[in-house]
Image 1 (cartoon, rainbow, N blue to C red):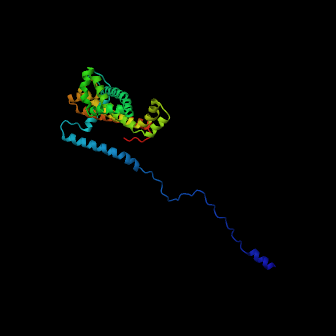
Image 2: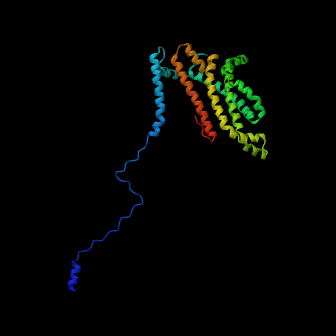
Image 3: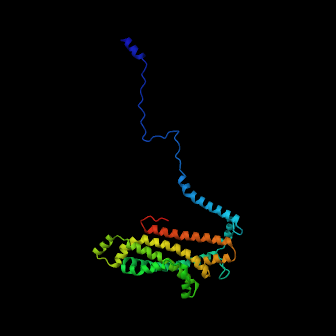
Length: 297
């Protein structure tokens, strides 16, 4: 018995096994795992093409200036632009004003002519698209007058209004009205016939049909006509002001040509392009705000 007890007491103790560690719910990232990189490729694909395009334009401009006598380089034009825009609203007489005043005068004429065209053209387009009799009556007139150059109407405006300013507004009006009439009429004619059948079943009045059915359906077409009209109006006002004189960006360009100030002419071309782009982008924003369809440039 004592021998057995001695063997038990002298036997080495067995190691106690520890419980296996519990797995964490969140796996730790490996120590050598690479950090997540932010890709700049979409940014460069969006920014790089326009930058390269402008750089190509400046390069071509530099080459043309180097090979032509009297044609200003980009650096010389930039120097003139800094001086010009340092005081764009100076006034030294009725025909000697800054580029800011000339641009404002042109925008006012475009706004008046364009607004009058919208007030006349959009309702007329609704009526032409809604009633076949009016469509048959006005379609030959529109087909005959639409191809006429807007500047061909300028002498008629001078004859009727006896002044340059209303004649220029008349030229803007006559060139802006056709896209509004045509696009609005096409939009009305493309309204699904099912909508009109529902209106007949519900016995809706003509006012309800226009406001509740036609106007929401025609709005994308109408805004497309407005965008086309504003682009045409801005093109025409420059040419009209060259012919009529007075204050305006077109007259300013012609006056700088008479003074052989070519850098100012190039500056005016850039300004005209930027303003036209801003006008169209503003109308694109309005179209996106009032339509569910995607409006593309």
